[in-house]
Image (tube, rainbow, N blue to C red; front, side, top):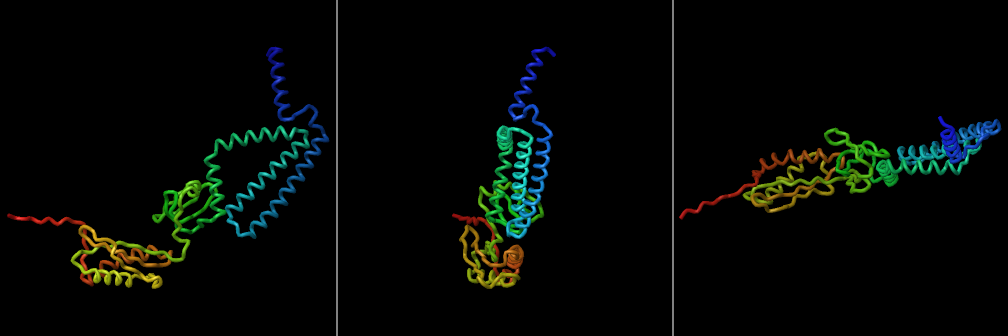
Amino acid sequence: MTEQALISAKETSDGISSAIGLNKGMFTWDNLLSAAIALVVCILAIMIIMKILRKMFSRSKMEPSLAGFILKVIKIALEFAAVMIVAGSLGFDVTALLAVFSLLGLAISLSVQNLLGNLVSGVVLLMNKPIRDGDYIQAGGAEGVVKNIGLFYTELTTLDNKTVSVPNSDLSAGQIVNFTREDNRRVDLVVGASYDCDTEDVKKALYDAIARTDKVLADPAPQVLVEEFGASVIKYTVRAWCKHEDYWDVHYGINDNVLAAFNDAGVKMSYEHVNVHMIQD
């Protein structure tokens, strides 16, 4: 290596050392002792502070996921402060170190901005509580029972026992339909019957189908209404209330009982069809 190259390498090394506040003679016994004492004090302080905070959060009504996230953030902040204190005891330029860490943090945040968006959305969901574990919801293009609300993703279990992970940003940015927040839920069904059948007879048969179904609530009272006069069928709307956990039992129970009730009442079901009349001259 030439003398010019050695001089250039030395200047580069000196520049880096100057940028982070590293000076010759800074690692003295006094500085090392001060740094060791500062490190021990910081570790003990962090342990005591975190122990107190864990007790406080365990007694609060805060969601465990949110409490754990806040504790992690506080611990990282305390550890960063401890690093700065120890670095200052060794003689480093703390201001220069903060500038370096700030640039590094900016670069990292730009590279993981989607994850940060999910993180912020997760914190918002945990704080506002539009959904809770066990709720049956429709949101983010998925539908199912909330299994776990994480900081980045929310897990849903579908009716056919599939696990769907929905990004929290999709939940917070869109509409959330919570089917279990209220105690009761209404079952809405549409049933078709022939024009040849009297509407009152059809209604009585549908009320009979509701009466045969278990877990239907008497209050609010069930309803049977004429929905639409179609091209070849009269459509009736059946409305019955139940507890939200009984929704599917009542939904399929009424469907199962409609055919039997129609047969007993002599009501004919119909289907979409076209009548063709031949006119002869």
